[in-house]
Image (cartoon, rainbow, N blue to C red):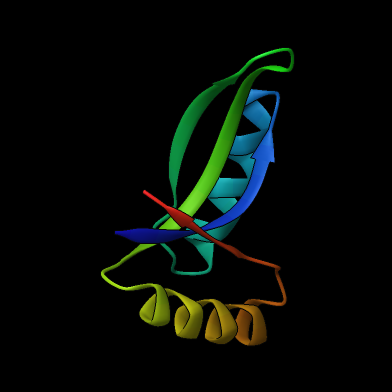
Length: 76
């Protein structure tokens, strides 16, 4: 499955602040913690759950138009 990644932060509190703003807009963001070799721990903010790549691309386009935030399609 796929989701939309909206941003990534090195500081958890920054990711949580961003998520709070998204929640206030009616979205349901979630956090994915990832360790990147040579770069440390990153906190990725994502939304959505899409079955196909095409469904995720359509959601990306709609999201970007509505929220004016760039989104990236990613595998869950």
